[in-house]
Amino acid sequence: MERVRELASKKAAVIFTKSTCCMCHSIKALFYDLGASPAVHELDQETRGKEMEWALRGIMGCNPTLPAVFIGGEFIGSATDVISLHVDGSLKQRLINAKAIWL
Image (tube, rainbow, N blue to C red; front, side, top):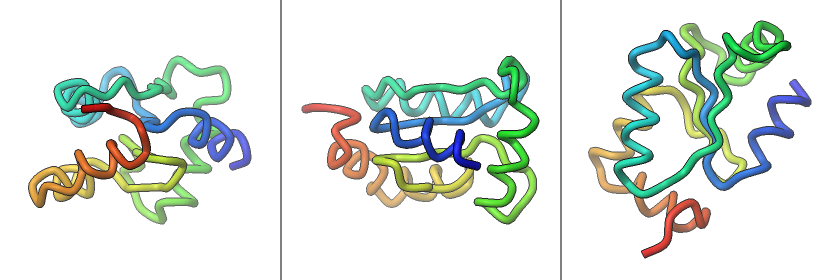
């Protein structure tokens, strides 16, 4: 779990994904469309990816665990949480506040 927390705090926006996950791809595309350049960690391509996925499951308390999104080091949630924030207009402001995007 320490590795996940360390990676999650290194950049303003961090997304843990799998390269074969369509929702992961959609969330990454949303961040890029908003002007953010998140750190993306493809767990199916990481040496300790399975271990990190289990750690995320502990943080999130649910399954599926991916995508797992952190903004400003804070766990935001999975795809449904991110989409909800985008729909209510607060996702972009969170990214601005974390300095993940500049206007």
